[in-house]
Length: 368
Image (cartoon, rainbow, N blue to C red; front, side, top):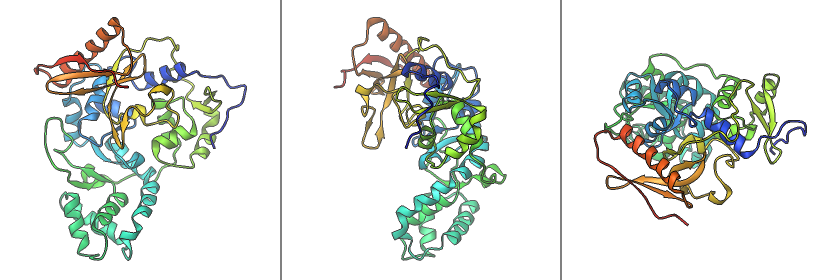
């Protein structure tokens, strides 16, 4: 059950929460920081596909170019692996080696879903064998399945590969993940890739503070949604003397860092074009601070996320690249001045991500 705040705690309205979150997400004004520092500040970027982290940083950073993320990835300072919510994220090396241990218990619980295919499989031995295999040379999931199947021929091949992914912090080695480069997914361990051991399983307290710095003000349930973890209430309670508390419009207790930005609700929020699976829209149990009630469910189809347009800080439409054209599809009517601002943001994004290429910007049919 979501905790209700004391009636004496101040209420933060929807627009106040929106502006606070956008400020921490570097979306009110683009930040003059490096891509590596931004990845650390945002505690990773969701990255099922290669391109979204690049578009996510283009929306947030002043002077960003795709090479600003490709370079630290090629230099093994940033990498892609499964962490939060059992999804692939782009993280700094430090977070690969410390955040993954924090969420390891959730990865272990995930294996319950594959238990029928793992009957008779010694998971500890599997982890040892899989580590030896991928540290000898990077392996694809297919190669890993085939090698493990030699030891457990009666097991489900897919379950064996999933077990290896859950038990080990498997990094996708480059050139996979580099901008403009192809490459199939090949895996090795984070420890082998970075040349240093993983951290011991940390207490969640430090990650709570980092989450609030990037996504707050937020409830315990919000952070649990972001991390894919449960039972974080104790960490918030330990930190309570160091935090401020507020109430959401529905009375839910929100926690925040005392010195974190909480801009005026009327602070202008320029239009932004965000990639599919942007963590801005996936990191709160209650997404009302970003998604108006009338637009709930319109940014997804099945398990596929669409690219999202923000107007005045809130989800207001979708966008896509189609035949050398950036197509913007608002959910509602956009004024002439608003269209000009959106078009200008689109042209800026295209110049950053596709320099030298000729793209048009047009507005598509409003989606019902």
